[in-house]
Every structure is written in C-alpha cells, then in structure tokens.
Length: 502
Image 1 (cartoon, rainbow, N blue to C red):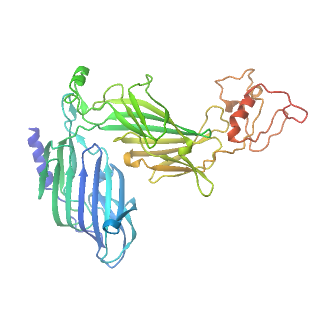
Image 2 (cartoon, one colour; image 1 turned 30 degrees about the vertical axis):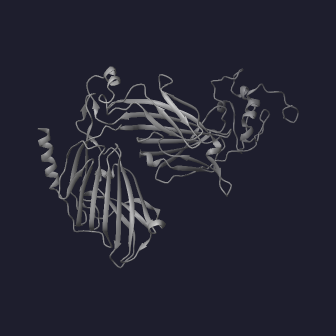
Image 3 (tube, helix red, strand yellow; image 1 turned 90 degrees about the vertical axis):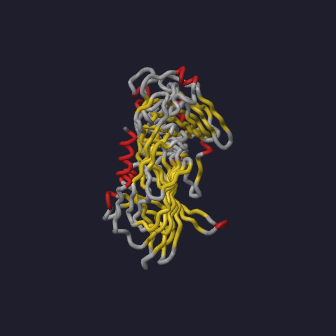
C-alpha cells in the first residue's frame, strides 16, 4: 500500500514543471553538467557551467539559483574558473556571495559568482562549482529496528534550476549502492548500477523545474555534532592547549525496540548496520598530552597515530550510537606554539590555526571557537575566509591580573570543507604594563592568602603609576610575569625610606 501511495506521489510530482519566461538578460549557458553525490549523509553537488555573453553590455557576475528549501540547508558554495588549456590549465577561485533579485519566481534564492574580468559579447568562460547540502536526506521509515537497514529520501529536480536559458544539460545522481527502492522516471531517465542519469535535455527555459524523489539505502553514519565548543588557549610559554566539548547525535532513522549487545557483537554485518561505534579525528602533527573523556571519566577505547605530517585519533564512545541516540565527551591535546605562531613582515605576530571540526564526515550544527590569547594581548583582529560571528570576552586564569582576551567565533552548519586556516593578528605576546598593590593580603583583609580567592580580587590595577604609603608600581613583561607573581603572593618584606623593597 505504501509503495502504491509513493508511486502516485512521484507521478504527480513529475508532472509539475515551473516555466517562467522572465530571464536575466545578458547570459546563456551553453552546456551544464551536474553530479549529485549521495554516498554520505552530506550531499555534495558538483556543477560545471559553460557561460556565454549574448548581449552588448559586459557581464561581471553569474547567478546561481536555488529552491528555498535547498538554500536554507546550504553549508558551502565554492566556485573556480578554468584558465588556459590542456596542460597549462589552472583553476582560480572566485568570490561567491548570497544576493537578492527584485523578481524571484516561487521564492527562488540566489548566489552571485564574481568573474575575474567582465565577459564581453560573444566571449565564453567555464565555471566549476560545488555546493554542499546538510540535513537533506530524510529517513523513511523514520524508525527502524536493530536488524533493519536504513532507507532515505532525496528531493531535487531533474532539470537544473537557473535564471538563464540552458542549451544542453545532464544530471548524474550517485547512490551508496545499487539498492534503490524507487526513483522518479521522467523523460530521458537511465539507471546503471548505483548511478541515475537524467538527460541530456536541450533548450530548457529559465526557471524550468521537474521535481524528482529518490528512495534508496544509506547505512553510512549520520553523525551530527549538535554543538561543539573549541577552546584554543595560547600560552607565552611556548604551547597551545586545545579543549573540545562535543554533543554528538545520530541523526538517522530512530531506533525502535530493544538493543541486544549479544546480537550486535555476534552479527556485526547484519545487526545495527546503520549505527556507528567509532569516529576518526584528524589532529595537527606533533600533538601531545592527548586525552578523551566524558562525564564519567577517562575513556580508554581510543587509538592515536602520530607522524610528522598528521595525527589521527580513533575514538569509540562507551556504547554504539543508533538513530536518535546521543553522547557527550571531551577531547583535549597540546601542540607546540612554534608550529602555529608566525611573524609578518610588518612585525605583527599572528596565530594560524585550523577552523572547523576535526571529526571526519560530520556536520556541526553550531560551532563556537574561543581563542584565549596571553594576558596583555590588545586589539586582536581575525581573518576568516567565510562569514562568521565575532565577539570578544575576557577570561581569568591562574595568577591573571588584567585577564586574557578571548576572541569568540561562531558559525552554524559547518562541514569538513570549512577546515581551513584562519589567522589571529596582533597577538602581542611579550609586553604589557601592569601596576599592582604588593601587600595583597592586607588589602584582602585576610591574614592568610586563601587559594580559593582569585588573585584579581586581592590586587588593585591602575593605568598610571600609583602613589600612597603601601603602593608600589611595577612595570613588567609577560615573559617574567609569573616570577613577579611569586614575589607578590609571598610574605612581603619591609621597605626602606624611599618606599622600595629592601
């Protein structure tokens, strides 16, 4: 019965085609080739467009059109242009930004690709594009038992949605295996193994659209990090300490019934095939002091492989994750500061570290990166190759006086392709002027220094040299900061007539 209803739904959708006569002037697409990769729970679409300018005015941008549902699930859109021919061919990245158009049929959303140089009349250029969709595979059925395989839906169009006239196009959809329950059959539909081909189609009008649904088996881990907080603490003592807090979930079909550990271990190829019990984290080279724990304590089921080029940490949660199950854990490690701290030609120091999530083939719904700079760092600036939300905080740690500047970066819908370096500039590691009251115990009104009392509560800070009977101004550098602190929290000696320590 369900199969009959699905067939009727697919048939009705295949008859629905939106055609609009309103197109953007200036450009037409001579040839378009699209490949949709469904082998993971993250959908990656590769698009090649050969664009021609057919009007007198030069064209400097090319628009990409998306249905509203896809636009909201876009994690990344990238574009490059091919320069040269054959052996001398190279790829140059282009700037891609979301944009709006005054008239958008059916709520169509757009991205604008900026060309290297304006395209004159009769000239052509070839663009290579990739865009990534998350949460685009819908489990059906929504609940499965431990012995069932996972089936999912994917919705798209057999015809490429575009504001331009497309003379020739074709689409290839690749599934994880040849186990395809059903798919929409329209004109020029072919299937071979784990690939479905729609097209070639010729002379399609702007905004043409032909909905398709593909129902197929996908037992890949649907690993989604609902929230990840990475704290990157930079020390002027020559190290970087990274702490990562994960809230992990299995976003596939929910598990129903009971879980049998005996069945799971005795028949791994047939029981719980859509679950996952381990994940791979790609860490920087030369990591040290690696730990992996949760609220209970240390988790010993992990393996670390290190080399001069990369480090791989294979982790296993305390229990395998089925659909709807969740786990929380912490990964921490240290790396040498010299591998990530550099100095520009102008003399400014900057930190070059990787953005994104170290876990392979995961989606991060919300990523927060907190870069804790050494005390005394001022006016930090951040360079990230994509849009993020930025803010500043202050953190107090052991023996801090003025606090440490924390640069906070936030981004939603993060995938593996976001793991690119970002830079913090003007770290200012070595100098700072701090003015202290040395008799901290007397000011705090306690005969003994309480370890639980934060040091910033026992000192006074001023922007200028302070005056008074019991106040001493100290101008120090961060490389000797902790030595000075050891003097301050020790019992204070008597001072001479000049008010200096004897």
